[in-house]
Structure formats: C-alpha cells, structure tokens
Length: 141
Image (cartoon, rainbow, N blue to C red):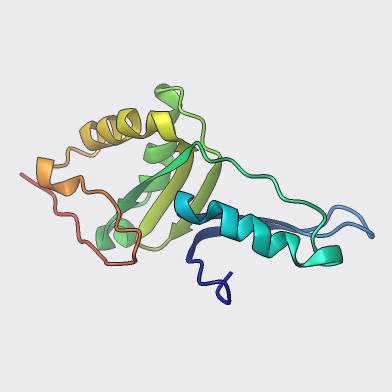
C-alpha cells in the first residue's frame, strides 16, 4: 500500500486457522483510494487469495491521555454503542485512543451517544483529518 501511495489507517490481522490457510488482514483506507488498493492487492497474485471490500463503513474514536488512568473507558464505549444497537465491525486501541469501525450511516448516532455518555463539550467532537493532521479534543465543563 505504501508503494502505491495509499495511507492505511486501522490494521487488524487474524492468524490462520489451518496449516494451509493464510492470515486474514483487515484495514481501512480513505474511500477515494479503494480502487487503487484493490488493484494493488490483486497484483500480488498467489500471496492474496482474494479481496473483500466494504465502502459503507465509518469510524468513531475516543481520544485522550486521561484514558490511561481511567479503567473502563473501552467498556463504556462498547456499552454505549451496544445500547444504540450499533454493531462494531473492527476495534483498534492504544493507551490513548479507541477507534471503532461501524456502519457509515451510524456515525452521527454513535458520535451523539458517545458525546452524551462522556459528557463532552461541543468543541470535543471533530472530524478526523484523513491526511494525518492531528487534532486534540477538549472536554468542556
């Protein structure tokens, strides 16, 4: 993907389940790069046994350095999304960030529900910059 100039975001690998199986690799990219990514993977030949895509996904993230010292943030995210009946397709975590890949049409609902659950100020909800520019949400009070 890097050689093709495609920025990969969330990456998840599942180990093979059999001796002759390959690992499954799931990742997200900008929707505009989907065709280039599928072409790149298809050009790998035998290394790849196929590509499945979904261009109807979105991502919602909770970000904050305070997550390191507050156990249960991930549990609260999952509880809130579950209560809203929003299925999580993929999850990626770090000590300061939890990202959930969900249906694109559920992003607004998820953001609103998480915003309320974590009692965030209006300036804490910002779209992610696909070009990699960082943003720092703040908690209003």
